[in-house]
Every structure is written in structure tokens, then in C-alpha cells.
Image (cartoon, rainbow, N blue to C red; front, side, top):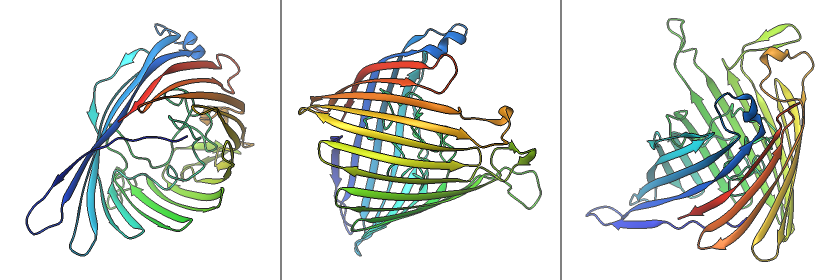
Length: 335
């Protein structure tokens, strides 16, 4: 899926330093969401408006030695399940870059969230207008990993990203204070690494995250409170009109496999279909499960209307025993 991003750029020249660059970009999306699961939510309609409006502000400048220093902040508002939201700003991300190396500080992207093959190749990187629960992710949709938070504090971490040729490496670290033991932070701590290599029309990715003091689960009668370590492996290929990605994820709770395929139909239409099979590990109690055991699948259709506007429609069937269907349709525009 080719994504077009139109940015407004202002160049501010100042004496004694290189020109600074300010970019404003973003997107809007709006449509209708029908979710069968809302049958069980009192006072919530099955059909609602889903929308999001996002502005991203990127600033950067360059030293006399060729080192780029900059930052990013976002403003975002959204509505979901009939609840309208107001706009809020994200915490900032700062960066220093030189050559193929970039170091981010603050509201980091996260090595796991940036790993090629984790998300499917659609406008929402999920299904439909807003991702529809992201049931396609092989490591679950609990987002128990670091990611840039568009309207919140984020993880306040540190990460380094290096790219050279077809290779990319990404390592990230974050730690949240908040423990009760004097002299020890005892907060949520995450360390993640992702390695990816692309060659010709193919790519392969391996990623791992170690988490300390994460959520508690009970497995084989034992309480696990050290966190929810996870592993991701993905491989894919782009054959021009067709493409496919296979991903495998493993956490303390479950193993899962996702197969996704995409096809371009004519000059403007793209279809992406996926199926996910999740197996809850033996011994994990139902009371501490956060994922659904079984098979989920979905299909996403997009039509490029030109000018950065795309019509998007999607259908998802989750692994829930009941209330498993949802459908969305709407427009996405970028600028």
C-alpha cells in the first residue's frame, strides 16, 4: 500500500547555525463501526461513529558537524463506541541522528512496535478504519510493549536505531518509577531488540522483549510476576501485485501464528486478508487470560480516490464464542 504524506515545511534561517526545519503533517479518518459485541454493553449502540484527527509536529536542525537534532509532538482527538473525545497533546520525543544512526529519547517508538511484519500492510495497520481491535497481531492486542503514545505520556524511554543497506537494528529501553520499596524504583521496566533484513523482494525479522514487574498471570499453579516477555518472528515477500507475511509470536500466556496476504486489483484497489490462530499455554488460568484462544480472521478493502483520500472497509471475526463479528467503512485522508 503506497501511502502519500503531504507535509507543510517552513524553513527558518538564523545566524550562526544551519537552517531549522518545521513540518506539520497528519491525517483524518471517519466512518461507521458496527460491533456485535456491543449487544452486551448496556446503553451502547451496536453501530457508532469512529473517527480520529491527528496533527504531527516535527522540528529539526543540523549542527556544523552534520548531526541532526530534533523533536516530535502530536495532537490527537478521536471517538469510539459513541464516546466523543477532545484533542490532547502527546509527550515529546527528542532525537539525535547522524548517518544511519538515530537515537530517540522520551516518547519512544519501541523496538517491538517498529518491527517489520508485526502489523499488516493497510492504512490503519489493522483492519478497517481504526484497526478493529488489531486481532491480527501475533503477540496479542494488549500492547504490552513500548510504543509512541499520540495523546498521552508515552513510555519516556531511550532507543537507538541503525540502518545500513538492507539491515536495520533497533534496541529500546524504558522504565517507569512507582515502587513501594525504599531505595528501589520497582517500576515497569522493558528492554527490547529487533533485527530485520530485506533482500530483493523478501524480508525477515526477529524481535524480543524482556519485561520486569509486569502483569501477574497464574500458570501451572504458579504466580508469575516477573513480567510478560515476548518473542516475534516474521517473514514476508512482495511479488509486485501480490504479497504475503507470516508471523509467529510467543508470550508467557500464548503462542500465535498470523498469515496475511494482499493483492492489488486494478490500479486503485487493494485487498488484505489475514487469519490468526492463538493457543493459550497449558496451565494459564482463565481468570488471568487477556487473549482469546482460537482462530480469528479478517479482510480489509481499500480504494485510492486520489489526493491522499482512501475509502476503507473491513470485516473481522474474532475467536470469541459469541458476539464475534464487526464491520467498518469510511474515509481516510492524509496531508
